[in-house]
Image (cartoon, rainbow, N blue to C red; front, side, top):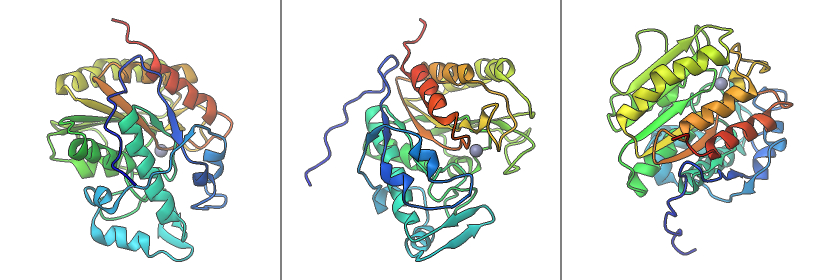
Length: 298
Ligand SMILES: [Zn+2]
């Protein structure tokens, strides 16, 4: 294999966002009737990307012991109360992370599983094995020379893993809007700092309040940070019809979130986190993609 093609500098607001995935992710990492199941990707489509994150790329975020544990799984294994894995999970996780890297290269939207934002440096958690968005952020900084990265997480759950990985790192701004109190229990009032912005929202919060918080708090924080790249951790479990979440975002709300995110930095990319309603998932992906692809209203 030759060297990877040079970064093409796409991902500007107004560019059409490519959906990047791999049908293998609908076969590997079988989880049975678990909400985070193979069918989540079977209902989605996009361009097939064959790319595994390398050990070096993973090691920028995860400990050697965590990577070794995942690599050595040789049968059904319970990694935490909510997180199961099998012998194909290591491949699935590296493929998911690899597609997230490709999304950074191409300004795309990585449609992947398992999700990543609960995964900590040293352990799996909450359906997540490797922290895909964190690996993508470190890749952007280390290999593409982006200095400042903002991660905007609009999954219904607090992105505790991403927060912990970048806590105290002033080159990465982490923003999370999430239902609270709720799993995983972190991200409550008073937990923000200079480069962490946690915005806990009560159950039942709908588009109007959510988007007002986004405009009033997220937009000025991200613009003030002046990132070179914004990475969206997109969880569709904040949708009103999600079986796990209790927020009330609609399809139009997700489109609006994508549109606002595309105006926050010169470049943007997105990675799928949660979202467990198989009937709504395809059109919600399309809504965020349309929002991301819209030209900013300036
Ligand atoms: Zn979630």
